[in-house]
Every structure is written in C-alpha cells, then in structure tokens.
Image (cartoon, rainbow, N blue to C red; front, side, top):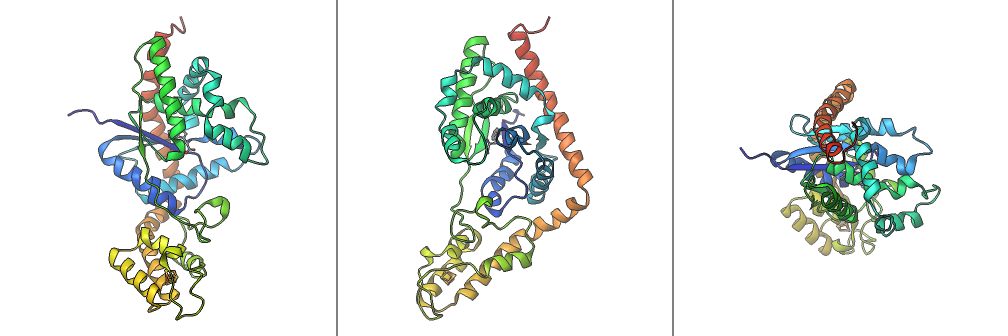
Length: 330
Ligand code: TRP
Ligand code: SF4
C-alpha cells in the first residue's frame, strides 16, 4: 500500500475553543484523519513569541484545548497529537534555518508588519517574534509534511516555509518536499453581537458551553433591526441569528425561518429556539466525550506524551539526515 501523505497543523494554546473553530478548523482536521498521516500539535513556543512576559496561562490552556480536540473527534489512534516544546528538534532546525533566511523575507511578512502595528500592550520588537515564521517552517519541515491545513491568514507563513525549503534544498540537497496549503473554508460565523466570533470580543459560544449556557447566550442576541414589533417583517440577511442558522440548520429549517421572518409569520423567539436546539444537539456527543476526558486528565497527558514519542522518532530522523548533510558534529 502506498504510504499516506503527511499532514501537519498546529494551534497556539488559547484555552477553550469556540464553535467557529469546530465548524472551520476542527471539522477539517477530522476528515483529514482518514486519508492522511496526521500530526496535530500545540504551538506553545509560538505562544511565547507574544506572551513571553506572562506564561502563567499556557499550561492550563494546553490541556483545555486538547480536551476540545479529543471531544470533537480528533482521534489519538489515528493522529499524532503532541506538544511543540517536547520536540527539541524543532528548535535545532529553527536555528539552522535562521542561518539561511534573509532578514528581508521576514521584515516584509505582512502578518509581522500588521501585528507590530496592531498589538498593543506588548513589546513585539523581539528577535523571536520576527522569527515566528522560521519556527513555523521548522515545525512543518521537520516532519517533511506534504500538506498543511491552514486559514488564508496563514498563507504568507506557508509561502515563507516553501521559500526556506527551496533555499535549503538548493544549498544542501533535496531534503524537503514543498508543502501545499489545504485551505480551511471558514464559514462566515458571526459572534453573539454580529461581529466576527472571537474571544477578544467576548462574543463566543464555546464548544464546552452547557446547553443552558447556549440558551442563555442566544436568547438575547440582537436580530434584524427592522423587527421591532412581533408583526414587523424582517430581513434574515441582516440578522446574525440567521447567519448562524446557515451553518447549523437544515435546508428545510432555513427555508422555514427565512420565509417566516420575511412575512412575520414566526417570531424571533421561535426562530432562535430552532437554532439553540440544533447547536445543543450538535454538541451533545461532544460533551459526552468531554465529560469522560475531564475526569481523566491523566489520560489526556498520556495521549500528548505518546504523540510526542511518535513525533520524536520522525523528527530525529530528519535531524540526523541534516546534520550529516551540513557536516555537523564529528
Ligand atoms: N501560526 C499558526 C497560527 O497562529 C500556528 C502554527 C504554528 C502552525 N506552527 C504551525 C500552523 C505549523 C500550521 C503549521 O494559527
Ligand atoms: Fe433574525 Fe430569525 Fe428574528 Fe428573522 S426571525 S430577525 S432571522 S431571529
């Protein structure tokens, strides 16, 4: 049997994830598990590039996030789940890449320029922050990954990874495949206030939110501004509740709510109830698995450690090959 192609992706540890992560990234990862040799890791060193001054939340966030991964169905039997900082080879490769990466490639990186300008309250004029994509390149290339599921925001980083791989291959020999992006389709998912769903806006529904919490969050959501009284007709396209319906409701329910909204045949309370019920139903099996893992955080740690053993074997092989090529060591 032909060897499965390798997929690698990572997330910075940001604690509990929201349903936007589920409908975008995690659903994608789940499907990939069947067809690829998947490596999914927690990028705790990357978290340090901006959170270096206060690292107190990182450990806890790692466990919360991995419990979310497991509860939505990322399967440790199928996929290799591990922590970046357990695999020292990433750091060695990062160092070697830093020798061959021109400064200008990093300085013109749009994400870098944007974040320097936008992120307030932290000093990001560090060596590590500039080198963020070099570390990302080493995460990907140390496993010789063929495909990298990412959102469009990460494309410049993947392009840099490819440039670094090309340069390395040119200088020392064909070691690395050039990894391709597997773009994650991010459904347009608004948060509770109609802005983009994001923890920093405090408008999220968490994957781990209990059914009653989901109810409490969705009931007071703002709706189409035209529906002031119960018999005012509305425009579903101007309503964040309807945008959520588009991700979580069936075709029939969509027709029913859109039509009912435009004719004022249904009220917003009924419309929201359908949505609440669908999200609760979707999360029911997720919560059932979550309860199991929450009781067994020791098992969660074991999963991450077992993953590290598998990852380490691959990473060590690559590093051995590279040390040989560069004539490092005696
Ligand atoms: N930079 C990615 C993000 O912020 C996280 C990440 C780190 C990553 N290393 C990676 C993603 C390697 C894919 C592959 O989302
Ligand atoms: Fe929004 Fe539904 Fe109310 Fe229409 S009926 S405004 S779609 S909540």
